[in-house]
Image (cartoon, rainbow, N blue to C red; front, side, top):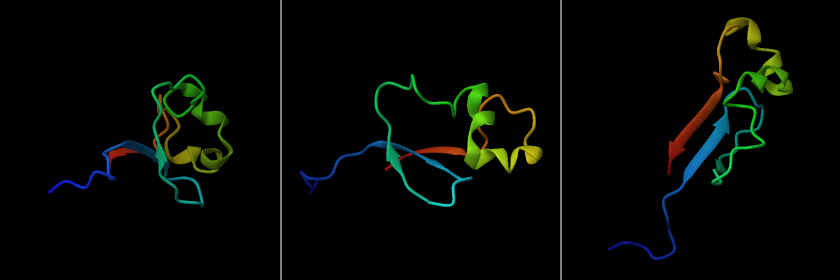
Length: 66
């Protein structure tokens, strides 16, 4: 039996951040920098960019369905 209070959602998280938190994705990704080359301006990922210097999107960005 399916619980009426639980729903599947797409979530995202940052592997570079010291705080692990899953954020539910909204329909709009206009303000996000994780999927573009602007991820290099992110202070959480800036310390680790030597490992992934040529990635077009943030290599520390994770998405999943929960």
